[in-house]
Image (cartoon, rainbow, N blue to C red; front, side):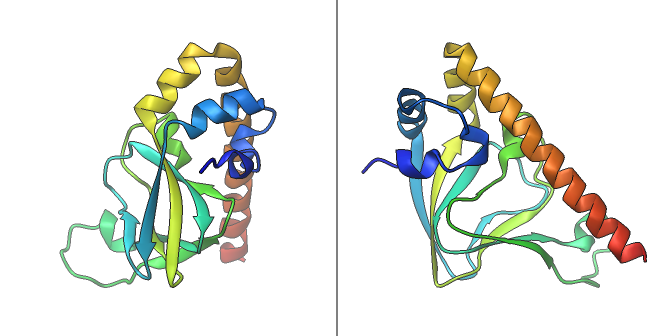
Length: 158
């Protein structure tokens, strides 16, 4: 089954041709998760990003991951709930460092399209126009998320 229809709805793929979307679709892998199942954990290597086909994903941060006390003083906090057609983990495209948050299935079931970082970057290098469009869209998406985070920080300070 082709997922081109879903891919064309993803912000970072805006302005790509059907042919380019088919190339991306060819490197995706569908994965399913059950309620509460972890997709990836905070502070683990990031080598892929995901697009939600079905279900809800909870993005969580755990304040204890930055401490060294070994005590579990805090519980993970959900900072976002994502749904069908949204993507997460895209920072892996430009930064193969560790994850800044965890992601887990927040509904009875989740189905994801998973895109491997290395395969995706190879595809973008083969088609430089596609690479430019994706990176331009990615920068705009990150700018929006930074603005939203700044607003959350300001609200918490007031």
